Length: 166
Image 1 (cartoon, one colour):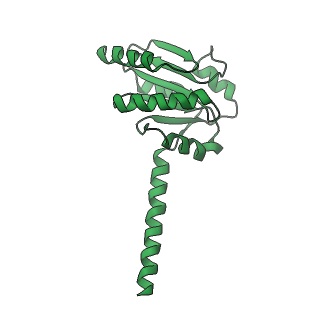
Image 2: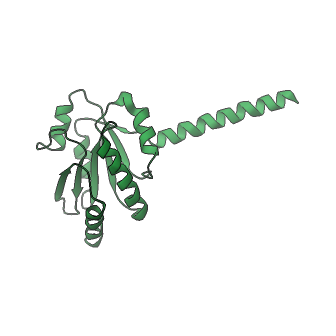
């Protein structure tokens, strides 16, 4: 009888580990390298979407995550791309932070090039690394770039406007 209990405990432990691994994998970020930004934009040609660049140590970035979480709940088809400017070595911490917010549908990337200036320049030659940095793409490919904390009402207005134009 004791053997059955031990086997059951082992199986339960294995299932728990698998569940955690699957849950973590769902929040893993893709490596953001030279060419990734063009890949993200090209994959969404003709559709409105938002790209948000953020970091673990950026207070306003985390406040924006709360805002994006609320918007994603209200607008389930919101196409949101999150790009962490942290490093791949911080992937577990990034995944932990992303799990806090209802952003399961958001695509997640993390800077994976030691030459971060090149990545920033590729995103936007006018961007010097200030965070949060957010880009709003409409269906015609026109972009609005904002640095700093976002405003819920303004973003919701942008979403509504672009839903009409789809």
